[in-house]
Length: 212
Ligand code: NYM
Image (tube, rainbow, N blue to C red):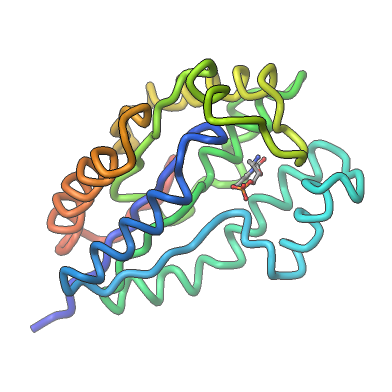
C-alpha cells in the first residue's frame, strides 16, 4: 500500500484573530484522533534568516522594504524540503501564517503591487486548505491592545485586511472563511471539521504548487 500523504493546512488572519491558539488546538485534536500532525509557523524565527526577521519585527534593526519581503519568502523556501519530507511521510502540517501574510503585509505598504509581492512565493507547496480567521477591526480592538512589534497598529491592520480580501478572490487557492468572533471552542470545532475533510481529500492528490 502506498503511504497517504499528509495535508498542508494554513491558518491566516489579521493579528488578534486567534490563529496561534487555534493552530495549537487543531494540532492537539488531530493528534488525539490518531492522525500524525505537526505545527509550523512563519516567520520561523530560529533560523539565521528568521533571526534577521525577528530583529526587524522587534524594531531592533531596520531593513529596506523589498529586502525584508524577500527574507520572509526565503524563510519559507528554506523550510520547503522539510515540509515536503513530512507531507510525504503522511504527516499533516498545520501552519500559522504562510505566503498570504507575506503578500498582505508587504502590499499594505505604499508602492508594492500584489503581483510583485506574490512572485517570490510562486511554486511553494500549495496548501490543501487555507482557513481565514475573520475578525473585524472593532472586534480585534476589544481583545486588548496590540503588541509592540512592527505592523501592530489598527491603521496598518485595516490595510492588511483589505489585501487579504483581494487574495481571497483567487479561486486557485482553497480559502474558507471562519467567523473568529465566536467563542474559542465553537471556532475550534468548525476548524477541525473542515480540516478533517481537507485531510481526506488530500490523501491521494499530489502536492500542488502555489500560484502556478
Ligand atoms: N509577517 C509574517 C510578514 O510581514 N510577512 C510574512 O511573510 C509573514 C509570515 O510578521 N505581524 C508579519 C505578520 C506579523 C509578524 O507575527 C509575525 P507572529 O505574531 O509571529 O505571527
